[in-house]
Length: 319
Image (cartoon, rainbow, N blue to C red; front, side):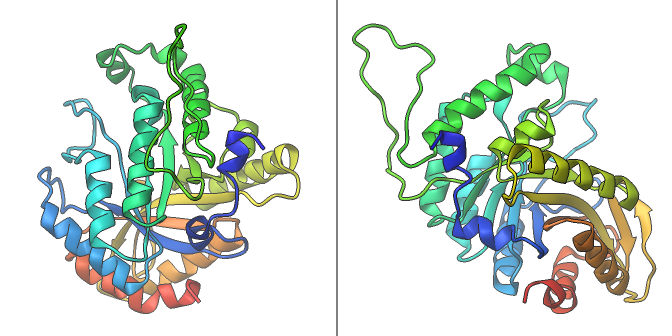
C-alpha cells in the first residue's frame, strides 16, 4: 500500500466528519465581528469549547502566512499549529482540521511534525487539510516561483503523505553518503487522514486518487451541483467503488427571525434558521457531506448563532 493510500484508510475521526449519504456541520475559526482585525484568543477558545459541547463535528483553522493591503482578509490569524495545539487542549470530542496548511510555502517535514504533534495532543482528532495558496507576491516573499505551484504541491504531498502514514517514512530532500536514516517522533498508531482543500493546481482525478475528499468554497446551487458531478465522475475514474467526500466552506449571517428567507451574500447566505435547514438538506441531496460555517456575526453575537444552530439545525443532520 502506498503512502497516499494509507492516508485514505478508515479513520474514526474522518468517518465522524465525512460519511456517505450524510451531512455534518462544523465551524471555521477565528470568528470576528465586522472588519475586526484583532482576534480575542480567549474568546475563540470559549467558542471552541461551546462548539465541542453542543455537538458540532469539526473546528477548521486557516493558514494565512502573510497579510498585505491587497489581501481582502484583514484578520490577524494565529499560526495554525499554535492555534491547533491550543484547540487540542481546550476540546474533547470535536475534530480539528487545518483548512488549509499552505503546503507549497512550508517544508513538508515541518508540516508532518506539526500534524503528528496535533494528532498526539488531540488523541487522534486531527485531519490534515492542505492547499497551495494562490497569491504570487506571497510566493515571491518566500522565494518560491508561483509557476511551479502545481509540481511543488505534488512533490510536497508525496513527502508529507509518507511521513504521516503508519509506518512513517522520512523522505529527505538530499541524502549525502553516510547520512543517517531519520524518523519522526512520537510514533503514530494510525495514519493521519489528508484532505485536499481547493485544487492545489491538480486535476480532480489526482485529488480523487490521493485525498480522502475535496473541500471547496460555497457556490450557488446549480454551479455546486455541477462541481459535485465532476467530482463523482473523477472518483469513478480514479477510485471506482470508493467513497470520497465532498465538503463546502459557507459563510453564514443568521438572522433573529427564524422565517427570514435566504438571500445570497459573498460565499454564502443571509438567512433565518428554517431556510438554512432547507439549504443544507438541498446540499446533502446534491452530494455534499460536510459544511463548515464561516459565521459572519454583524447582526448578532456569534455565541447566539452557534447555540441556535446547535438547537435547531444540528438535530436535522447529526442523528
